[in-house]
Length: 316
Image (cartoon, rainbow, N blue to C red; front, side):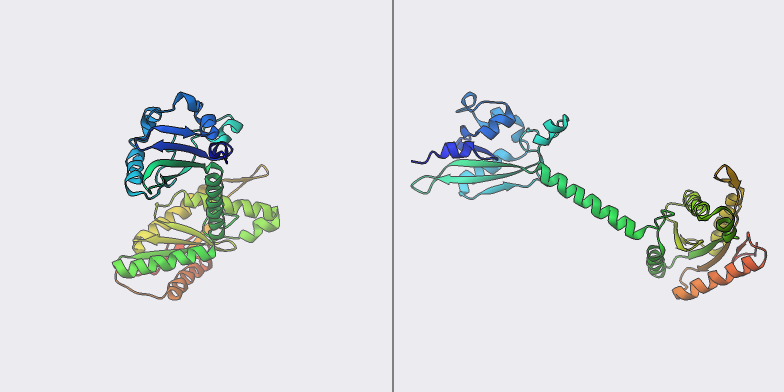
């Protein structure tokens, strides 16, 4: 005759058998190894006396339901983490104890008359699977971030910033609140690449983007539009407010000293600003055209200027 208890002892999962009173009839070698308690020392004891924390987690209630209904029950890892106070095998390998991630199945065991007179508790150590899934989700999030972020400047890339502008325009239309945007261009940027090399230019692009980003409101968005041009979205901001924000950025940036190979460098920017009043609807390309027109005026007028339509604010 097959010795089923011997089979259970060779399984690489935990197995506990309880009687109708939820007393331990058997547990296998896996449980002994993880609980550090021999089966002989707990035979006939109630499971709640061995593992007192099972009761608050709803384990005893569900076990009684299995006895009563004769139907299996489950404890999902996402909802009921670390049901039994076991440590994962990985903990011992890493010398850092971590609770075992578990999935648990309560299976009714019926006698010859079809009556449930005991329960088989199967405990699966899914710690490695959870770690793998978390790593997978982390990698996915990092890839998504990379697909939305300009690698050099670490601000939203062209596609991302245009998508954000589109979303803000929808919000502007729905909430009937003002919306402003600005196109920012580094003055005479080519001379940095020609004089000091492209690595110097890249360094300036990165530092400038981070410098501006650190001085914006939480809901303002800076993105790289292309080359040395950046797009700044200013939600719920009037034209006059946008001009003030942008011109303050222009002035502050002009005072910043960039260092490259022990050289001290300064840059200036030209900014063209466009806006939509509350309740006003303008197509995205028209908003861009207005900002580009103002940027052209800023450059043509000597650069290092912020320009917006005169009806919103005076030219700088």
